[in-house]
Amino acid sequence: MTTELMTQLGYVLAAGLFIFGLKMLGSPATARRGNMISSIGMLVAIVSALLDQGIVDFTYIAVGMVVGGAIGAIAARAVAMTAMPEMVALFNGFGGAASLLVGWAALSPDSGTFTLVTIVLSILIGGMTLTGSLVAYGKLSETIGSGAITFSGQQIVNSLVVLGIVGGAVMFCMNPTDPNWLYMVIGLALVFGIMAVIPIGGADMPVVISLLNSYSGLAACAAGFAINNNALIVAGSLVGASGIILTQIMCKAMNRSLSNVLFSGFASVSTEETVVEGEIKPISVEDAYYVLEAATNVAIIPGYGMAVAQAQHVVKELTELLENNGCEVNFGIHPVAGRMPGHMNVLLAEADVPYDQLLEMDEINPRMEMVDVAIVIGANDVVNPAAREVESSPIYGMPVINVADARTVFVLKRSMASGFAGIENPLFYKDNTRMLFGDAKESIGGLIREFS
Image (cartoon, rainbow, N blue to C red; front, side, top):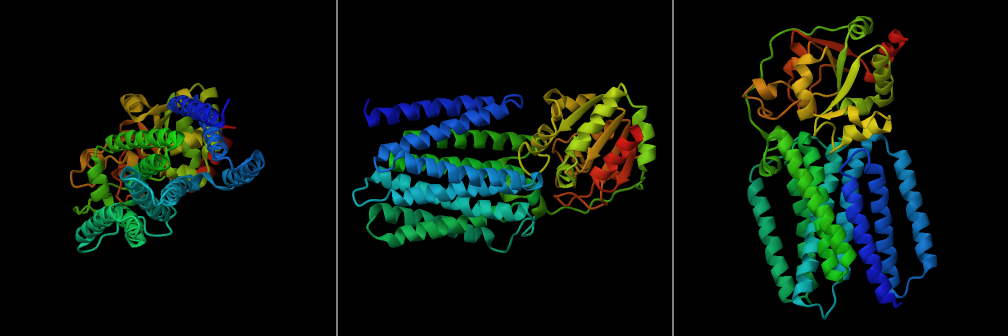
C-alpha cells in the first residue's frame, strides 16, 4: 500500500470519526465519548498529514504527542472552571493564528488564482479570529472592561478597514510577488478583529465565543483548500457549521438577531433607568432550612456565581439531602447562563449531577408555578423578570427562566451588585423572594449542616 493511499484512507477515517464524535456531542450522556472520538480522529488526521510529507518519521511524531499531551494535561488540571470561558476564547484565537500561519506558508511563486484567494481568506479570517478572541478573553477575564467600547465615528473606521482589506486582497491576488499587499491584509485583519469585538457588551460573550469558534473553523477550512488537505477542509467545515448553528441557538435564546448582538450590545443600548419598587427581604440559613425541609418540589437555577464560588459539589450534596427528604429536585439551565455555551452543564457534570435532572428553559418554565422553592445560585440576567415586565429594559423580550412564578425564591448572592449585563433585577424585590447573602458555597454548606 502506497503512502498516498494510506494518507487518504487516514483522512477518510478521521472525517468519519469527526462526524461520529460531533453527533455524540449533541447529548450530555455521550459528550465525553464524543470528545474522545473526535480527538482520536484529529490524531489520525495529523499523523496521516505528517507521514504524507515524507520527511517526518514516527520519532518526531511521538515526541510531539508527548509534549503536546503534557501541555494539554497541565492546562486541563490548572485552569479553574471559572476560567473555562476565557480558555475557550484563547483556543479559538490559537486556531485562528494557526490558520493564518498555514495560509501564509502555503504561498509560493506558482500559486494559482484559486489558491491565492483561499490563502487570503485563511489569513483574513484567521487574523480576525486571533485578535477578536484575545479581546473576548480580556472581557471575560475582566482584564479589560466587560462593557461595550464605542467611540464617535466607529462605523466609519470599520468601513475604511473593510475597504482596505478588500482592496489589499484584490491587489495581492493580482500581484502576489509584492509582499506589501499581503502585509497590509494581515495588519488590517488583526485590526478588524479588535474593532469587531470591542463594541459588544460583556453579557453577549457566550454568543461571541460560539461565533469566533465558527470563524476559527472557517479559517481552517480555507487553509485546507490552500494546502489541498481534505482532512483540514472537513474538520474546518464541521467546526464552522456547528459554530454557526450554536450561535443561532444562542441568539434565539436571547430573542435577538445576530446583527443586533454584533452591533447593539446590552451596554451600548440607551434606555431609561429602571425604577424598582419594594424592599429587600434577607433570610438566614436556619430559616431557609425550615422552608426547604417542608418543600416537595425544588428547582435550582445556577449561574456564573456558582462557578465563582465553586459550589457545584455542595449543590450536588444538598440535592441528595433534599431527595432523601422526599423532595423532587430539578435544575433549570438557561442557554446563555454563565459566560460560554454549556458552562453550567459542564460544572454540574463535574459534580456528577444526573443528566435527566438538567432541564432546559422551555422544560422548566411550565413547571415553575408548581415549584415550592426556586434556588437561584449566582444567576442574575437569565432570571430577570424585567425581560417580561419592563419595556424600557435592554433585555426586554429576552426569554428568561420564570423563577418569580415559584411559591418562594431564594437568591444566593454576595451582595446587591448587578449581573454581568449591569442591569437592575426586580426579582430581588418581589414579595416571594428572600435574599441569602454570602458566599454560595458557604451558604449551601450551612444548609447541608442543618439537614445533617
